[in-house]
Amino acid sequence: MTKHEDVKNGIIFPVGEKNDAYAQYFIGQSYLQSLVADPEISVGVGNVTFEPGCRNNWHIHHDGFQLLLVTGGEGWYQEEGKTAQALKAGDIIVTHDGVKHWHGAAKDSWFEHIAITAGTPEWLEPVTDELYDQLAK
Image (cartoon, rainbow, N blue to C red; front, top):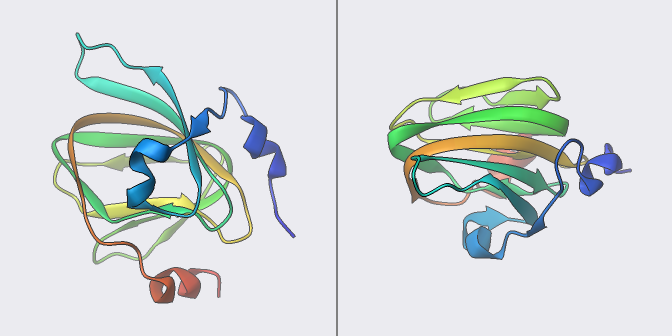
């Protein structure tokens, strides 16, 4: 059974279109609704929605940061060398410059967060099924 199906319609902001521009950096389907994309500021704000089981690759933000404001569903966040954190609506994640990390939905739940991002992302290897499958146990 899939939890938090209401997330697929957007909790606060619209769910957006299929995230085709970044699909190569995700396992599973995600959706992106840009909320702030002003070329005069160096921060992007987007509503990112993940179908159950969807997660992004390991990545690093260079010369910047990423803030995640969880608005719905259940998901995961992990920094390299640390234990994965379960996420739910109301959680806030601060990822500092240069920290390798990934985030995404729980296997059985839709997941949505607002991503506030500065700097340049470096996309790395996918999160392995072996690592991800251990989180559900």
